[in-house]
Length: 224
Image 1: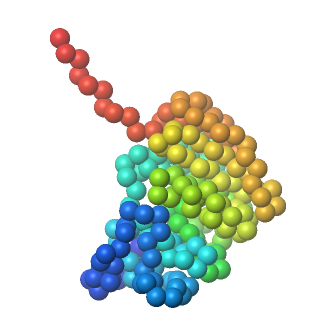
Image 2: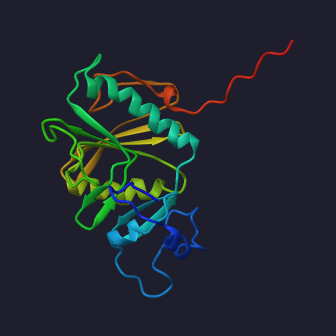
Image 3: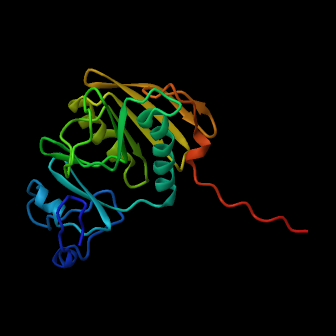
């Protein structure tokens, strides 16, 4: 049973319905081979728990859970931001963060890797299965199967809904791209890579060490 949406759902029937899907691709469709219909929230609720589902421009997009470099970058970045910007420890506070929030924007349902809201807009995190208030900042951690979706279609929706900043983190290329919204377009503020130390909007109060985000192989013991 999955409780990600605030309600428990059994997925036996859903799993049988999804047999034969190409889960490794960016877009795996639950609509069958006939004429496409716009995806609905019920389509998302029918998905098995080992995948991530979103609705973008009426299309149901299903992806496998991310691999370890993706997860490492997400968890470390969230950890770096939480203390100074949510708890106010060594930083200004004033934010709430959420991992993989489900965002409902009109008929689109997006799931960024991380999102943050300024407390003047959201004084406390509501007890809800999904959010309709657009975040002030979102971070998408890129995977080979999701990069084009994150860079183009989801960024366009974030601009439409008024998200202030978007970060794109690529753990394979070891890069961070920072964007600020200007009206309905994005202005790139900078691209950083490797082990650079970065002060990036809207969290420029923190010096972020990029090397902390990347998965590194364990050091092999010395041989004598």
